[in-house]
Length: 314
Image (cartoon, rainbow, N blue to C red; front, side, top):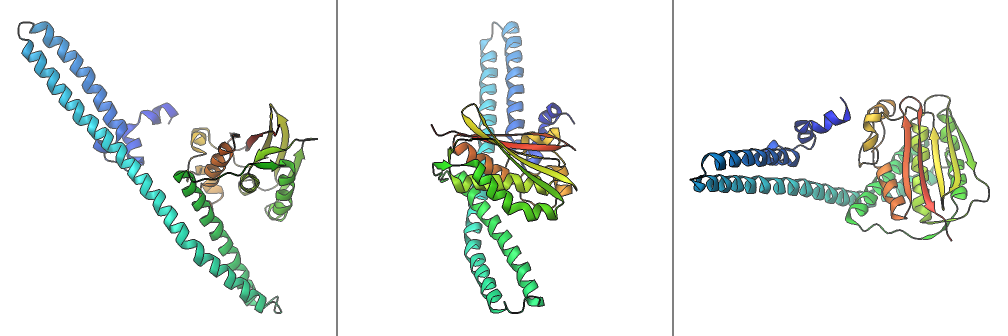
C-alpha cells in the first residue's frame, strides 16, 4: 500500500494506537471537519429559505456549536489518553530498569568470583556454563542501561558533557573491539579516516556508544562475505562519520520510522531476530543533544549508510 494511502487509513491508524474510534484523535478531527462543513451548508440553506425566521438559523448554529464542543472535548481526551499511556510506559521502563540494575550487577560479580575460583579448570563444563552466563548477563546489563538512557531522554534529564574528541581515534578503538565479531560473522571491517582531521566538540562516552551501535548494526544485518566501511571526513565545519554496509537494507516504506523508539524493519527482523529497536533512537537523541546532525541512506537488498556529523572545535 502506498504511503499516502496508509496515512488516509484512519481506522488502521487508530487500531495501531490501540484506541477506540471515539478516543482516536485523527478520526475525531475528521468527524469535526465533516460537522463543520455540513453545518456551514445547512446554515446557508436555512438562511436563504427562512430569512423571515432567523431563530431557526440561530438554533442550528447553537446545535452545531454544542456538537463541536463535545467532539473537541473528545479530541482533547484522546490526546490526554495517548499522553498518559506514554507517561505510564516511560515510568514503567524507568522503574523496571532501576530495579533490574542492582541484581544484574550482583549476578555479574558472583559469576566473576566463581570464574576466579575455578580458573585452574579451563576446559571444565562449569567454566563453559559460566562463560555463557557471563555473556547473557552482559547483554542484559547493556539492555537495562539502554532502557535507562531512554527514560532519561524522555524525562529530559539527559546530561551531555562537552569535551574535545577525535572521531578517528574512537573509530580505531571500536574497529579493534569488533574485529573478532566481524570475522565470526564473515564480514570485512575497513576504516577510511581522512587526513589531518580536526577534533570535534562532544561527549566521548556517548559518541563511542553511537559509533558502536552503527558498527554493530552494520555487522549484524550484513550477509555472508559482507563488508562494513567506517569513513571519516571533514565537511562544512563538521567532521562526518559514516558507516556503510552491504547488508539487507531498509524498505523504502519503513525508512521514515527508523529513528523511532522500539522500531525494527520487517526484513531486519527476519534476518536477525535479536534486537530492541532503541539503539538508533538513543543515537539520534545523543547526536542532536551535541548540536550535531544524523541521517542515513538505504536501499533494500543493497545495504545502508548511517552517518552523523559533529561541529569542529574552533
